[in-house]
Image 1 (cartoon, rainbow over the protein chains, first blue to last red):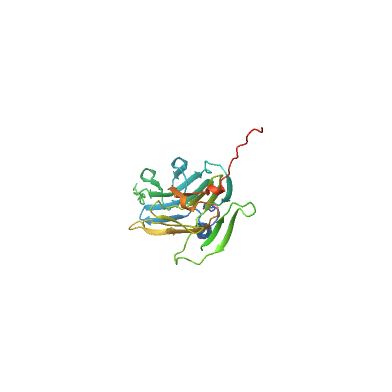
Image 2 (image 1 turned 90 degrees about the horizontal axis):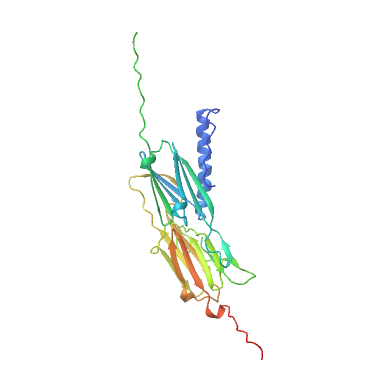
Length: 146
Length: 137
């Protein structure tokens, strides 16, 4: 599991502590992912423009049918399975590449419009374009007199 | 960052001896993860290099040193602000020392889904030879 975000306990702790926990958790995940990326592991980059986000993640050697993207509210979960080379002929001298299921989960600051989310897989890189749902503005309640 | 990985077919030291090599470039290089498999007829290298295609990777052999380099040319989305970065530009570099019994003139390579596959055949002298046995008279 790479880069799994653990949600803080919202109900028990004050908002300021929640934010601190969130920051700390994110920076730890970021540090670990950055360290792994420098060693050649899957790495991720994110860009933002208003309610549009672009997420680029390295998934070398994955097949299209083994990549799944699940969107629920404000979270996007990217999972892929890389299978061991189909040829098992000969002797393994070196085995550095990771195999099996790889997951990354992201929490975005808005609800995702799944109908506008698009993904392209090319040259071992998955690129996701995510668009946030239009936020409903504050609604004013009319006060009636009796 | 660069080092040299030995591909060898001797039982005692089957792989992984590394030797420091002077830094070839000033760019931060990623050492791509590699699987090496030995078959009866040769060696097969599978190298993870996401973002590269056949035009952006280069394989050279000089004496018994195989060098794989590649640069992933990834576009930067225009008008977007980067909010999270792990590694957006990749320059891959890895050096392998080939065993003496390979035919370095007959290497072949292909790339698919960001994985470079290099096939290194063994020289004819190194291939196993089956000796026919005749019935005794």
